[in-house]
Structure formats: C-alpha cells, structure tokens
Amino acid sequence: MRSFAGKSAFTTWLYRITLNAVRDLGRKNATQRDTLKAWSAEPTEGVSNPGHDRAMEAGELYGAIDTLPPRQKAAALLVWAEGLTHSEAAHVLECAEKTVSAHLFQAREKLKVLFGERL
Image (cartoon, rainbow, N blue to C red; front, top):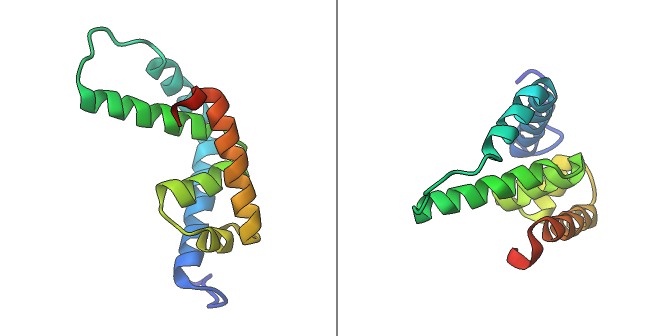
C-alpha cells in the first residue's frame, strides 16, 4: 500500500501489481508448468462427462493462451478472462487502447491457427 501514489485508480494499480506478481511466479515455476503441461497432454480413456469435456476445452484454451507472447497473453487474460474493457486493460498494461486491440487481434489469430475454426 505504501507504493500507491494515487496517480491512477486503485484498481489499475492493483491489477498492475497482480500482473507483475503473476509474471514473476510464471518465471519462477517454469519447470513445474512444463511438467503439468506434459501430464495434461496425456489422453484420458473413457471420458464421457460433458462438464469434464468443457473443463478440458477451457484448460486447452488457457494452455494455448499461456504460449502467447507476454503482451498478447496479458491483454487476453485481462480482457477475456477478467472482463476488463480495452480501455481498462490499456491502463493496466500502460499502453494505448489501440495497442490492446492489436494484441488481442494477434492473439486471436494465433489461437485460430492452434484450434482451427473452433474459436
């Protein structure tokens, strides 16, 4: 709290702190993340639960988002997962709103390649 200078909205400052903490944690736990990806890539036999299928699809999508370049990944998570507007995400990422839109467009194009036309 001592570092909050009041130059922006409290939520913007909090999102920025959270985003930096997530990035730090991601770098720190890269080995564990790779191991979990390898485990989740193994096929499961006899799964017919629709809820499980949706959870697997969500897991696949988040796994794919995790492979995006850092700025695209951050924009995608802030807008698609957290529900921020492009303007709010721009404040958090400290860039122009059009830059957020460009990152999301590039992310969507890369995800289309990974998932085909399922998106």
